[in-house]
Image 1 (cartoon, rainbow, N blue to C red):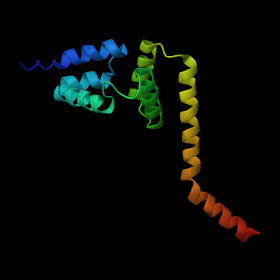
Image 2 (image 1 turned 90 degrees about the horizontal axis):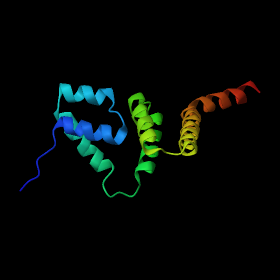
Image 3 (image 1 turned 90 degrees about the vertical axis):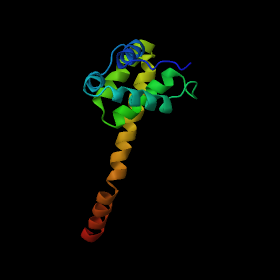
Image 4 (image 1 turned 180 degrees about the vertical axis):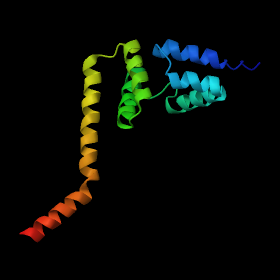
Length: 127
């Protein structure tokens, strides 16, 4: 016998239980196209299989880092909710923030390499 697929609302309830809340975009997507939640959950299972190499705390911190670096406010909020549910230690969350901030600052320096070339060329010319 095949197990019956959960309804879109049941999937939302599972998300609420695990995250405390469901991002409003997810709620709206279910109303607009219920099939999206099934694809979203399939993708979650692919990205974070059970069992996986990381525990839920580490997964949440990685997801937070990616959401911050990718400028995804909805995902940052979702991970903030998840941090509360999992009661992740503040020092761990702060360290993730510091790492992402440093990575983004380093990205700016790397992205500016052509500008540094131009500045260095003009410094040679002006000497």
